[in-house]
Image (cartoon, rainbow, N blue to C red; front, side):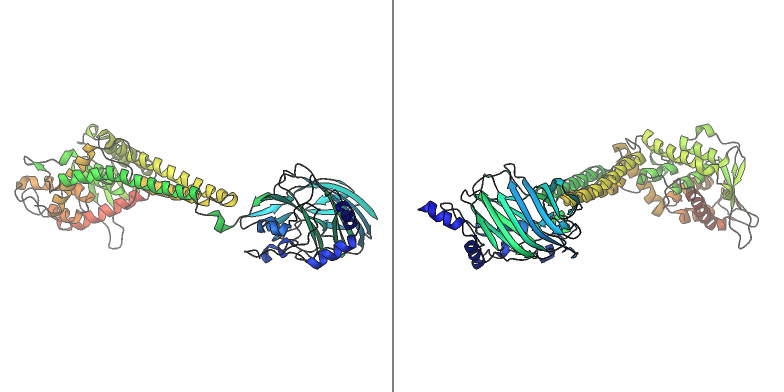
Length: 604
């Protein structure tokens, strides 16, 4: 009795078609719509047209769950993905028969027989649909053979009147809870109208349900006929009167283990998804925070030691011992700047030039000038100076100034002078290491950390672009950028003094306090004041106290009376020491400017 009933159902396709049209179609199972029209939240599914085998569970694809049709919610508009309806051309397809065979491995084998009139038409295949908010679903077509060519996702027939072609399609199967769905846009996208279309589907297992849709890509109208044979493994669909660009979509439900097919997904770049906060990116940001805190702790340990020593040994410290000049720890003016800020500055060189003059290695002669002329000074080599007793950086500076000359104008210090100043800078950095104030050269430490930070920042930029484009871990790249920038900036503070260096710094700061606010030495014998106060002056250049000590020096001579010159500084005619403070201020500014133009030292 059951067999007789099934034969009657199978033999009456017209009745089946009427039943399908009466049941209607589910919007969630409709042909793919443009991505821009895809709803962000799918509507509740409506039962789709269903034909089921007797005795098999009647399960419509829509009823299986909303995820069953997620691939059909939108087409991503592009050539070859049916994003636009092709322009109508002369001619027509009088009939097309499409045979679909779902293989065990999940590949859909397609064979088309097309009869046409007019020029060979073309068909735009559906190559991409919107899967979800983060990915597109692809339908790769391979192995095309027969009377057609495939280019940019479009098939163009060859010859006249009739063409047969075969190809394989991947990604047409969607696994679901307890079932799987085959969905393919079997007919459609033709550049001309299609009078009659027939689709025959065979699969590796008995079908549980089937449905079809025809019309524009967004249509939810059922096709004119759909039926299964008595075996339940073959289904046939039909449609008449498809317009140019219209689509016939077939959907077949299979048991869960019918094939090994899965969707082919490609991540779609969206800025909001590229920088999502998840376990991986959150952990990376937490690690970055710990790294930055560790860097701050390291800086506190090194810099805090300097502060602790300075605080313990703070207080004004005189530079006189037993009536003679004796700077704390024997620190020379040129060494002080590098000791204090780990940088070799132009002011260090300027102070060293003044110090060489005060100590008798050269003399500074201010040149006469008219009112609007630029001031200039002549540096004169003194024969009595024992240059062999100079420290390495002082000797490099001395040689750079004179360069086998007995005298040179300050305005003429260019050319080879600038190149040789690089040796002075190198000697200064080596000196602070040899003195035991630093374990390693400060400039080398800064360069290594800064270079590492810049490299890490560049890698972070490249990683951010790559991760944001291909994954959702863009924040990992941003973490690298932040870490690299912090490393480059923090590298400027990484040079650390030794305990000996921290102690020398404390004594130097005490000496600076004395020069800025201390007693000008009324208890110093008059005969020693000029030399002693002159020895203070190079340190005053470093500590920005030139005006105060220049006035002190200009106020006294060996016998306590004003004079026209100092033993190390000579002015032009009609110049006296009352102008020394202004002259000294101008000299230090001009010298620092001349050194700055060489770009060998850091300018303040």
